[in-house]
Length: 235
Image (tube, rainbow, N blue to C red; front, side, top):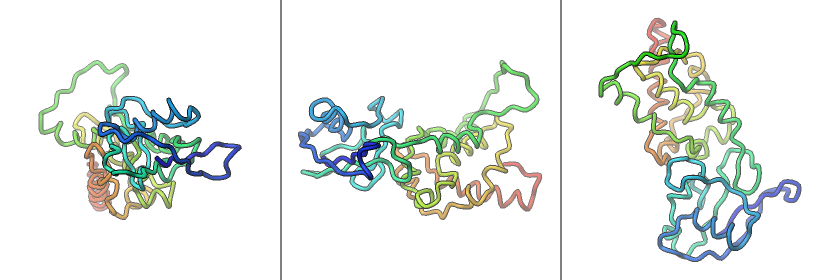
């Protein structure tokens, strides 16, 4: 495996370091990194947690493609080499660890939670939904914030101010929820938000949960265009 290393104060820029890793048929790329960490070089830094494609923390660039390393197997690349780098478009903290503070700020800006107007906290009432109402937003609720879509997005890599696929998809998740009473139009109807998307579709291609953020963005473009003509329409 060829692994990108970046040590603040020691490296001016990332460099690649080669490691001999056994080619095991059942080993994911993450297993290879854990082998390096445990047996060869304890100084290697990277994020991981669940190893089951649920937490989204082990996203990295594997042979040029944004992937979850827990679900990407070494056997996919034959005899290798397998090159592992940090996700593209994010500042590197150390080795394969990137700074996601910018994304977290974008995510918070779309208020990804249920908004209820005119009700006092804590909310104790229950709001039943039909299967059809659940289906309207369920797909977008599958996002695990793995950031693969950001790394694959050519717009975000060139313009870090772009709100980005995951934040917009999660905004749509709540926009389409029958229980939500929020209005995210002012955040989404911006040049650096839905109108910044050029519909390349790479975000949807790399999404491990089939959220289809590209569709979410295009759907809200239609909503925003209709609202510009019919300002009383909110969804």
